[in-house]
Image (cartoon, rainbow, N blue to C red; front, top):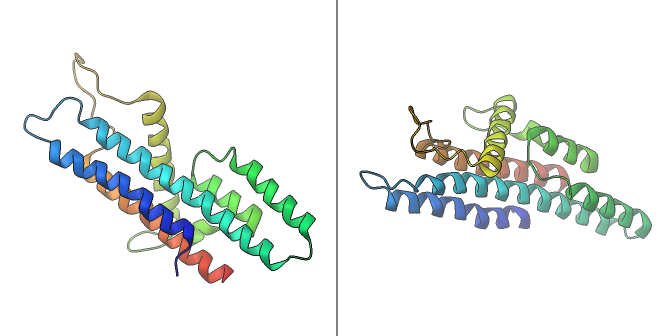
Length: 185
C-alpha cells in the first residue's frame, strides 16, 4: 500500500501533466510566443510536488515511529520539532539534501533505492540534480527566450524532455515510497 504522501504526490503531479496537455492543445503553427511558459511552469510544479512528497513522507514516517514509542513523549516531541525546523530550510529536493534528511531522521539512504529500467542510483542522482538546478534557473531567472536576440536561445524545457522529466520525477517518488514501505513496514 502506498503512503498518504505518495497519494498526495500523484494528485499534485497531475498539475504538471495537465499543463503539458494544455501546451499540446494550444501549440499551433506558428506557435504563440508565450506558450513556452506552460512547459517551464510544468517542470517547476513537478519538482514542487516531489519536494512536498519528500517532506510529507518523512513526517509520515516520523509520526509512525513516534506513535510506536508512546513511553517517551519528550523524545518524540524533540524528534518532531527538530524535523520541523529542518524542513523549513529544505526548499530544494537535490539528491544530497534528500539523502541527508532521510539519513539524519531514519538512518536510511533513500537515494540508493532509485533504480528502475535503464536507471541506477548514480544516474538518478545526477538527473535529479540537473532538474533541480534547471527549476531554480527557471523560477528565479525565467529563462524565457527574449525577442530581438540575434540567435534565439533554445527553450529551457522541450516538450519531449518535459514528458521524460515528469516520468522521472514520478519514478523517484514511487521507488522511494516502495523502499520506505519495505524498510519501515
